[in-house]
Length: 221
Image 1 (cartoon, one colour):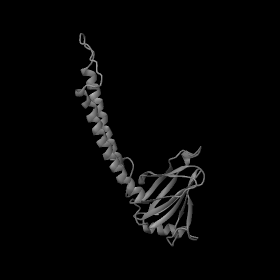
Image 2: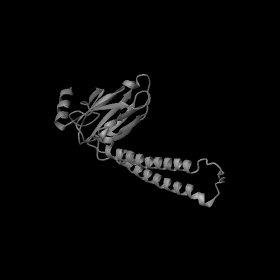
Image 3: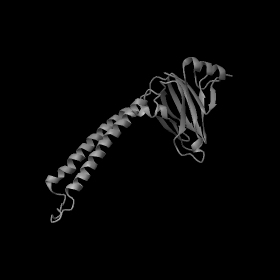
Image 4: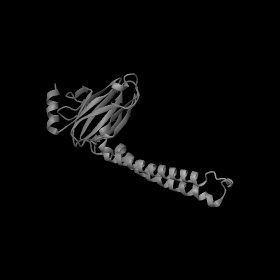
């Protein structure tokens, strides 16, 4: 459902969408249920001529079920959400798969710069390719990213990946993604970082292996 509004382009995007959908359904059911009960009680106990209002202390045993049972059900729903969220968090943030390529992502006011491995497929060698505003990767390959900030806090956001990771000055934060769609997509900064925050964008190019090899050859020294 969510992918109809924002395309999915990573292997874990569906997991995050399903978690958001689960939370939306659970909270939505509770919202409409409580509104139904609320307005139903307003109608049932509305003012009626000659009928005195009831005084409720909150200690009546036959009324406590209206607190205890909803409370118990809400806790059960919370546990379902927590279990699902922890599983997705672990898969995305902690259980890094075997890495095939590595890139460096640097945020600064107000642009994203990237360091790609060159023809040797190794980051940190003489043939690295540096770009500003363009990230080039290969589809169906696992990438590890090293995220840094040169000045203030930024947030590396790739909506089609369902990826958003804060970049904190003085720290190198690692993460991963695997693109499963070909195309050109937006990269954003999702953390207010100053007057130029709104223009701090970049483009992600997800290529086939042949297209990426041609790009590397065209941009190698």
